[in-house]
Structure formats: C-alpha cells, structure tokens
Image (cartoon, rainbow, N blue to C red; front, top):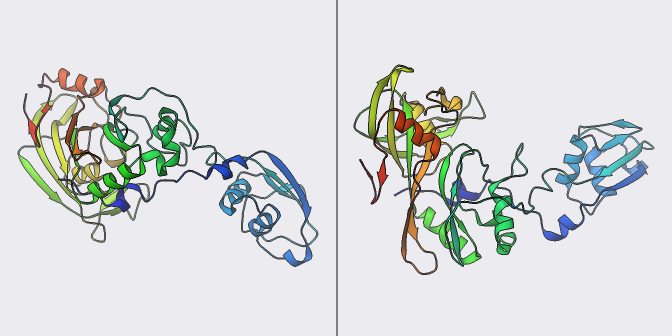
Length: 344
C-alpha cells in the first residue's frame, strides 16, 4: 500500500486568501513622502506601513512587478533602502497570485461524486493547483467552479497531487470531515494508487526499489536519489518489453505501486535504474512514438469512503496518447483489477 505523509501531500500547496482579503484587492494608488523616521529603512517595510490593509508578501510582489516608484523610478528590490523625503508612488493592484483562487468553469472528467468527495480523471497538461507560472486554469480553479463548498476548504479539497503531465485518477474532498479522513488515510497507507508507465530500455521481472529521494543538489528543479533524502519505495512489475527501431535500447511497459509519496518518485526511481520514462526530458527520457509528455498514468485508485467506510476502487483506462503507443507495438491493453496488474 502506498504511503503519503500529510507533509508530502498537502503542506506545500498554496492556501486561498481569505474572502475579505480578496475583497480588498481593488486597484488604488498611494503617494507619500518617506518620513524622517523611515530614513534608511527597507522599501517593503515602508510600503507596508503606508498600505497596512495588504499583506507584506502581496506588497513585496508588487514591488518586484515594478508597481512601486521612488522619485519616479521603478524599484523592483524589496530590500532597497529609502531616504527621508523621497517620493513614493505605490500602485496597489492584484498580483497574479492573489487572483489565482477564483472559480473557472472547465470540463472535468468526474468518475464519481457524492456529497463527500469526487474522483477526477485528470488529463495530461492540466496543472493541479496554482503556482508560479500557472496561476490560472488549474484543477483547483475548476473545482472552485464545480461546487460551492470548495471555497471553504484548503486547496479546494485537494489532498494529493499529480504532476502537470501525468494523467489519471485523483480523489478530492468536498467537506472538512472528508478531507481530514482522506489525509489521515493517505498518511496511514490506506489509499492505494497504482500507475502505468512506458520507460526506456528492455527490462524484465519484478523490482522493489528502495532509495531515498531529496532535492537534486546540482539541479534544483529536479529530485534525485540522495543519501540525505526521505525514504522512498516503489514496486515495479514489467508488463511488456521490446526492441524497437526508434529506440535502439528498447522500450518497456511497467506497472508501479508506491509505498511512499515523494515528489516525482516513479520518475526518479526509474531514471536511477537506467529506465527513464518515455518523453520525460527532466529525467533523461526522450520523446518517441509520437509521445511528447512523460508516459505516466495514475490508473487505479482505491480507498475506504471517508464517511461510510465502504471500500471503493476506480480504474481509468489509458488515455488516447498512451493507448496509441500500446497499439503501435501491438501490445495488449493492460487491465488493472485487484491490487497488482493482470496481463490482458
């Protein structure tokens, strides 16, 4: 059974601003001279004193966007020191982040829904929650439009994540009670998530990978197997393997079961074994067979209903792009039923 601690699942997701904070985000312009007592102080501290009804982080973002001028010159460094008598002009406007937590109607592939939760089949390319570079058009925005209760929950009820280019199943809470129960179930290894993937190289058999994962010290945008990382375990079963002209080293189809929930865990573990995911450029996988996104699909999700305790299991068939690769190779479509993968 996979293990996902609450920290791994939700701690680093942004929390929506309070409703009254959003209401205050109308454009305004504040002009003032730097008072004598503020001489030599940081620009962001002086701005925060002049505009106390906004958070310091919001005002720092405005400074970095060039919305604050000192004697007519835009200053984009929040730590810049100011001098008494200088003229400040502060254009208080919503930042992209402050506008991120708004409802956006979008098509959601809802596999199951009741009063307590919903299960969504996320397409590849959809970002789960707002973050730098993706403040709008995320699954969270769609959930806020999908049901009114999402606005009352941290992260609109999202309790676990999939990478932008990973497709597949996610469970989302619709109430505080369901969210608490699902986070606890994830932490206690009571939520099973199984994945299907395509990886470089010919491979056979079953493999238990036990290798700690942490931030890559050389490339901060990547994770890596590092001695100081958090424990991470993945079970891998090779379903198919073949040599193909487009990939001289071959290609394999694998079924993965997580025992921990580290960031990029399957991608890192398979790459470390010399089998990076097809089209996963971040970890050494090249595109092939018409596939241009990492070949990873969250195919099966199982858990106990947080309100009734009823066992629930959902299976999402391969999306069109991955199914097309299977078809090109004349491999039978994989079938996931009970825990573990059965060959069709």
